[in-house]
Amino acid sequence: MNYQANKQGFYGEFGGAYIPEILYGCVHELQQTYLQIIESKEFQTEYHELLRDYVGRPSPLYHAKRLSERYGAKIYLKREDLNHTGAHKINNTIGQILLAQKMGKTRIIAETGAGQHGVATATVCALMNLPCVVYMGKLDVERQQPNVKKMEMLGATVVPVTSGNMTLKDATNEAIRDWCSHPSDTFYIIGSTVGPHPYPDMVARLQSVISAEIKEQLQEKEGRSYPDHLMACVGGGSNAAGTVYHYLDDERVKITLAEAAGKGIDSGESAATIHLGTEGIIHGSRTLLMQTPDGQIVEPYSISAGLDYPGIGPLHAHLARSGRAQILAVSDDEAIRAAFELTQLEGIIPALESAHALGALPHMKFKTSDVVVLTVSGRGDKDMDTYLKYFKR
Ligand SMILES: *Cc1c(COP(=O)(O)O)cnc(C)c1O
Image (cartoon, rainbow, N blue to C red; front, side):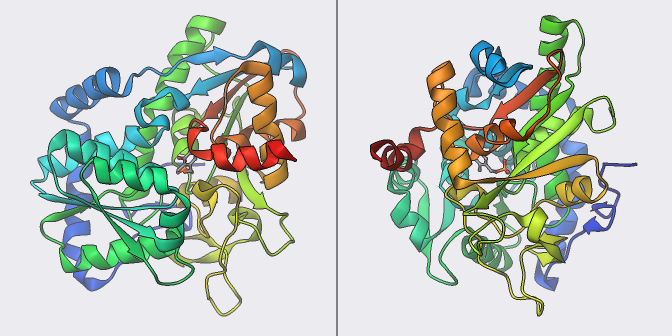
């Protein structure tokens, strides 16, 4: 089985670039140049220097002893929560801003849900002195004020989007609309392994530093470079793609991905795209998405704004359909319980998104000798309001 995108950006039947005519030129230009630039020595040097000195990489691989005892396996946490700006998103935005510069683009746009990708994009735009416009659903603007203020302090313009249910999907539509009106000077920094080819492949490559580090760190700590299990949460799929990238062809490594079940898969309030989705096209790629029989998008729901998306990256749709990855749906309640458990056992407050990966642990059957690597994609600072509501009960 092949898990890499082909020339047209397909992973099996998923992927591709379904774009309006007006974007053909700029998407084609990106398809033709991204690999050449990303693989160049100059790019690699600048990218890795920034990851080290600005982001703080490598992120630690931490043996969580008390959590390990609880679940009967040797559990390591890949600590993306310790990165600058608090999540894995910055690995990708650093790479894309360098690419934008090298392609001579002078204006940056982005979409954001909870605001983590917006902050990571506004951060690299400040760093590189490029103007930045971030599209954000009006509801998310109201729910995520601290991140809105951070983006503004960083110099970005935050545009509240009032279409649809005013969340991530609608922000993405609006960013694509902007891109269509400024195709020549504007670079669209997409925040996950979604969108038209080459974005899913490009973002997966930029996040693959996560699994490159896991390999080295496991070699050092365990004397072998692979784990028995890899676990991560999936919204669009970027932290998961980074976590599994260098292990995709290694069948010794079992992959488990956690998507958001919201109030339960059958509750009608869920974002379990892989469980509930059917084939369709969203934001430029063919993938699994939550839709009605006549193709209207079903509004997703999750307690975690970062997982609240009706689609999924085409790579992940392929990993699920081919059986390479096991997909578990983890509910709001299970994620909250897992967040408190990690906090009390290890003194680490995870992001609500990452708590879904942790919430998959009770569903796993481990052998005591198993080595497990679970990616903590971000820290919980942004979610304190939500956690406190549960704490009081
Ligand atoms: C955005 C986000 C996610 C979900 O996005 P992926 O592309 O699926 O990784 C997960 N965790 C955190 C902390 C995030 O900010």
